[in-house]
Each structure stands twice: as C-alpha cells, then as structure tokens.
Length: 314
Image (cartoon, rainbow, N blue to C red; front, top):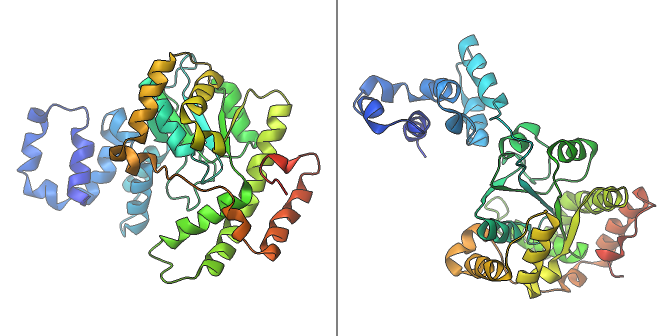
C-alpha cells in the first residue's frame, strides 16, 4: 500500500467520507502524506491507531526526519492500547509453529463469530517473541488471538489478569521442524537451497523455541494454569473434534452443528490463504538426520522435570 493510501486509510477510519473528501483533492496533503502518517496515528480514531503497528514501525525506521514532534507522535502510536474489558477476554491460541494453530484459530473464529488477530508483532521474524503492546491490542471481546508464545512469567501474568483459558496446539517436534524447513524453502531469501541445508537451518532457528514452548506450557499446566492441549494429529484427522475441544477448553459453549459448519467454512479452498492449513503427513520428521535429532534432544536436559514423550515418540 502506498504512503498516501495508507495515510488516507488512517484518516478515514471511523470518519464520514464527506468530512474527508477534501483531502482527496488536496495536493499539499498528498505531497505530505508521510508526515500525516505519523500525525494521524496519534490523532485518528482508536480503531485506526490500534492497527498495523508493524507497518508503522517499518516506515518509521526509514524516516530521515526524526524531529521531536515526530518522535512524540511515534511514541503515542506505538504505545497506544484500546480500552480492555476484563469481563470479556479474548480466546488465546498458543501453538508450536507448524502445528495447525492458524487453522484451529480460524475454526474458532468461524464457530463463535470472532475475528482472528495475530498476538505478536509481525516484525518478529519467527513470530515467537513476546510483545506486550501487540498482545494488549488484540485483547478485546470477540477476538481469537493467535500466537506462538511460550508460557513465560510475562505471558502467564497476562493470562491471569485477563482470566484466559489458553488453547495450546502441539505436534511431534521433528515433524514440525521438517515442515518448518518446507516453510523456509518458500522464502525468496533462500533460493535453490537443498533440503539438508533447510533442515539444518530449521533446527538451528526453531528447536530451542519448540522445546521451550512445550516445556513451559507443560509446567504451567501442572501448576494449575487451565490450558487445553490439542495435538496436531487430532486437528488433521478430526478437525470438528479438535474445534469442539478448543471451544470447551476456552470456556465457551456452542452446538455441534455450529462447529461442523465452522470447520467446513474454514476448510473451504477460498479460505485456505487465511487458514494456511495443509493436510500434513506424519512421520516426515524421520527424514531429519540423526546428528540433528541428537542436537534437538540435547535441549531436553534444560527441563529435567518434563516428559517430552508427547512431542517425541522415540
């Protein structure tokens, strides 16, 4: 989206067109759209200020003019959080990457009539980092907040404050890593890389997070956090049952007929770009070489109290 179009989107969000029509005809406004981008992130309605934090950040770091008034506007923009009602918390889905967490989030959204929003900042390359502002911005009612967050103290504090019952999706760690290698193969920054290189990159980039994710959520669950674990295999083979489990686990209650319709819509090919659900194949993790498998398993020693059998059936 161009600077002008994006600035106009911010200006017009929640504002009657007749009140902004003159902006479309104002050459000076169009010429100064970069400046207005920052100004309207501060002055526009809350819905506009709460949107597209990652786009704002990318544009800001490229700005040559960092005068005081722009820095003040930027500070307000990146710290703005809309009002939160603790009586109406969102549903929080936390999943191992490549565990169908996006798909189950969309099934929940379809079933409950909720919007699906990312709970992490898209400027985080792996989508696993904790970003309080991004998380709080998707903490309104009627939202399914999708994330890959581990259960560290900050996340658990948020869950306790909000009164959330998180949904946790998990998968065999080596199948997930092999799938992540396929994900890397689609990156325009990695043309022509062979499978062995991609598998090594996947392990080096994601293995620690996978292990930490499973260990921290398992530990939190054993200490009383009301987390609902759902396995990838269940999502793949019986998505209606997986969605029903998630709905009950999140403390909601709807009919099986509604769940069936929601899953059918989420599986519709027209929804695939959003749900990103591919019918994966179990057992592909065996393609990962033994030396990399030993490297991954060496991380288990960091969590001697955790049984990793659920994600590693060796």
